[in-house]
Image 1 (tube, rainbow, N blue to C red):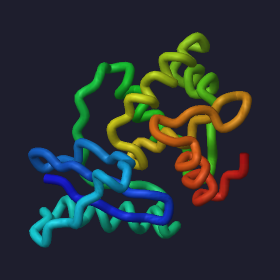
Image 2: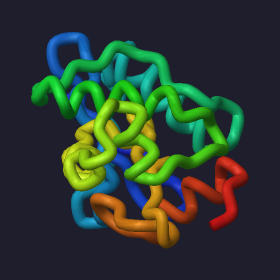
Image 3: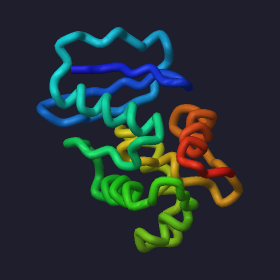
Image 4: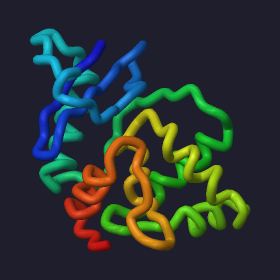
Length: 152
């Protein structure tokens, strides 16, 4: 099942499979669909939590998720959830926390493959030289950081 959410800077698609949220993606207008009136309880809850986050009323998303990923990707994504709301780390700092100063590129690669944007807040990881990349659009990354009170 899928649900969609329109927000100030674009559109979000949420995918549920077997009682877990499996994807949270920013999508373009062409992919946006009006939600079915028979969304599951989980999809409705995830929409509610994401809306609360986007309104600044929630700092952490907490609903059941499931990802297919390597052990390293899971370690990176779980480490993303430990970065406090309103704070950022560089790719190098996150790599160091994971035990390898030379993991910066691998950390960036894992962030780029993140299927659950916002749940695993990869927007909180920046380049040592500034904002850095984002899987879809650096303007969205900037807007999410601004929402959290981060100035770059």
